[in-house]
Amino acid sequence: MNIFDCRFLKTGWLKKLKSKNIEIHARSIFLQGMILSNSCPNYFDKWANNINNFYKDIELKNLSALEASIIFINNIREIDGVIIGVNNYQQLVDYNSIKEKSYLSNILFKDHSVDDENFINPNNWEI
Image 1 (tube, rainbow, N blue to C red):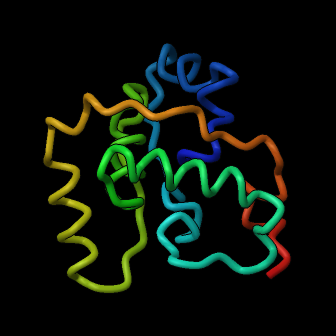
Image 2 (image 1 turned 135 degrees about the horizontal axis):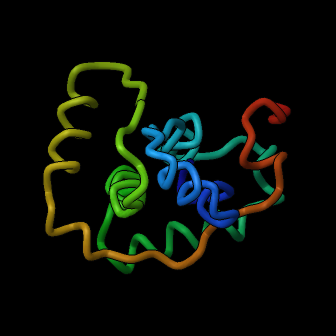
């Protein structure tokens, strides 16, 4: 689940699962780090408009991709927790400092979701 992969949100599965008291944890909120990357491999050229529109949206909101990813997930009430990967302690500190900024919860994003499995499913990436 991330700003580009909203399948569980759009299909209503999050609400269905939550209505059955199932605890939901999101993972890959950074799309395997691609969202935080300064440059994408050529493989992602096909979705350049989607990616560029996302960066324009967060630039207008004066946010980083890290902040936007965390805010997006935190605004989904059905999600109880997030599983993230970090490369060092500072990344964990940065994540937690953003997560704690409750005033950021009022920020809404345009719909940046992509339905193409070749983009949102890293198992399909040809890089």
